[in-house]
Image (cartoon, rainbow, N blue to C red; front, side, top):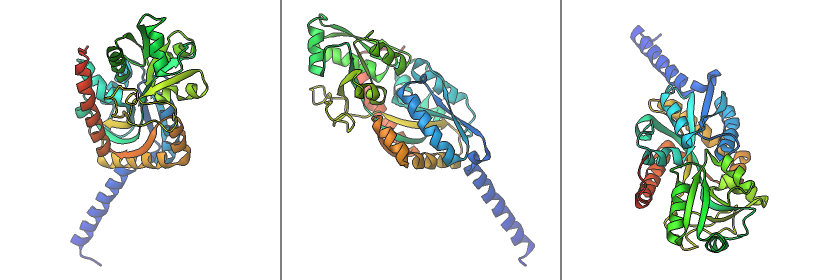
Length: 326
């Protein structure tokens, strides 16, 4: 039998190992995990969150629910994450708007991603694009511009899913470069914007491919241009703005999950691994791809670098438009 001192050392080692395991398996004890979404039900981000929640629960052995905190372009959900306990039971699924753009367009957003959040993992990039409603005669970007210059007298209103968003700045640049008087009409998320487009209450909108893709395939609206440096596999006939002579929008927005700062690394690693397994499943990967996402797991570190590069790019564009933080 080993001496008492050795046995005590062994006990301490086993206890320490057990503590680490307990931290790493924090979600296997039946806790409910809230996945915050900053937009209302019915939009692309909500659909993505519900798909991932369904499969994350299997990987984590826990109940995963989607909690919609719609308003202010995801700002309310981000503030809720900041106030949540750093134990891995409250997460924030978001795209670029809440993380990269709101901190640049709001004087007091109520959160600082660099201080208040830690990236868990990323799972996709996507593109924004311009779509025209079914009641608009234009069937291409060129025809849309011609329609604006002709019957519309050089004026147009374009819906965007949130104020002070990348889609809004894209509308500003489209107007400036084409010498058109385009006004961005902000909505509280993509779902109400889509409702007005489908009802022909608004002639065009700028949003993400996941927001538009199903109605585009159904012929209820038409996507006529997308950002990025290459065409999208789900939209092979839709040109990029770069092809159309509007360069400068090649950096792609991203989707990821964030946790409150202070969340244990073991928990972050477990969540990241679970997300990697979830998006690798054909049922998830194929569905997200069909929605217009380019699926690929990013570690928390990789997501942080992607976010920083994207933020720097759009900081220059936002300043160039003369936009003043609200």
